[in-house]
Amino acid sequence: MARLYNDPRWVALHSAAFSCPACGDVHGGLFALVREEPDAWTVAARRRGNASTTQSDAGLLTEQFCILDGELFFLLCDIDIPVLGAPGKFLTQSVWAMVAKSDFTYYVEAFAKRRQGGLAPWHGWLANALKGYPDTLDLPCTIMPRGETLRPTLRIDDGAHPLALEQRQGISFERILDLYALNEHDLRAEVLGRTS
Ligand SMILES: [Zn+2]
Image (cartoon, rainbow, N blue to C red; front, side):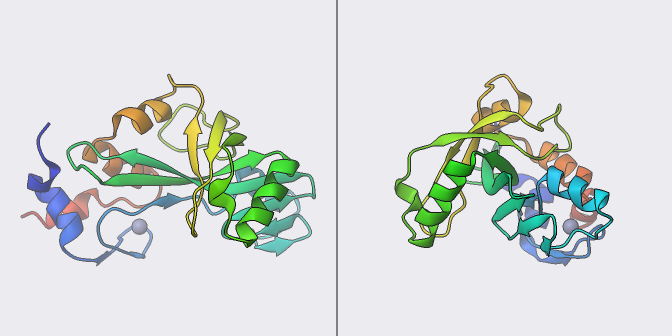
């Protein structure tokens, strides 16, 4: 496997921050794909005719926790996918997982005391349909809490699912650029343009 550090597009992506032609944000180097809300929240907000807000009659949505209609409970988790050819580098897919109320409450209480890192892994269901994969909504998963302010990590239980395979085996830079493009960050022309 060729080292990615020799790929001029990789170098371009990491050499300087630039404004994303698609989303307008400034990117420099790899960045996480973060879903701002569970898909169920989006659907509920649309049904109620609300813009998707952090707080509405639909429930509560923060950067990390979500409660919908008082009965559905979600946590934001990270899927860290190793980048082929760049040891120690990861593409992070930040996704929502639906969890049981008891697990949610347990986690939030431990999190408030920064003791969540000591909790045992538990079960959940992926709560976003991720672009670029066969349907990921409701996929059973295992959630592994981490310490400090880190989000829990998430592992797809079905080891044969393409997302699980990428998680285990890694992902190419080509595929990362494609996933960025699918998620409103098409940098392909930008990084190529910088190599000339
Ligand atoms: Zn962007």
